[in-house]
Length: 245
Image 1 (cartoon, rainbow, N blue to C red):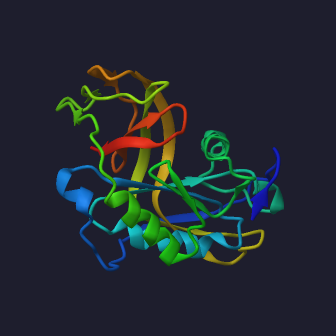
Image 2: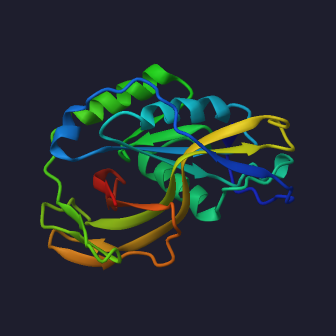
C-alpha cells in the first residue's frame, strides 16, 4: 500500500494482544556479527495493510539471524480504512518520511523495510531483504563503540569519524519477541497478525560529532522491554552503528 500525502484518521476498535514464543527460522552467521556491529532492519508496517502480514513474517525470520537487530514500527496513516493500529504512533510514520526524503523515494508505503538506514526494500520479498542484509553485513565500517552503563540509565558513544553534517543518537524502546493481534476491522479483518520486536517509543538522545558522549536513556522502560541505540548520520540517514541492552 502506498501513501502520497498526509492522511489523518482512525476510529478506535477493541483488540486482543498476546505475547507468543519466538519462531525458529534458519540462522546464519553474518561477517559483521563477529565484530559486534549488527545490521539494523527497520520494518514499517500496519495492521490495516493487506500486504503487511507476509512482510511481518519475513522480518520475523530475519530477526533470528545472528547479528541482525530487527525493529517493527507500526504506522498510523492507514487507520482511516477501518482499523486503528494498536501499536502505531505518529512519530513512527515521521521516521519513515525522513527515510523517504533522504533516500529520494517516490512515496511512503507499507510494507517497507530499510536496512542500516541505507537500503530500502519491500520486505515482502525474502530474497530482496536477504540480499540487502548480506550486502550490509560485508560492508567495511569503523564505527564508534556503544556501551550501556551498569546503572541502566545511561549509554556512552565513543570516539570515531563522524560523517559530514554530523550524526545523531536515537533510543528505540521495543518489546523483544513476538506479539499477536486479532484484527477486527479493515482489509485484515479476522486475521491474527504477528509482529516481532514491536517499537513502543522513539527518542532522540542528542548529537554525536565524533567525540565521546554520555547520554541519558529514556525513563519508564517497562519490564520485558529493551532499548536499541542507533547512531545515525543526519544527512543521508545511514546507521553508523547500533546496540541493544
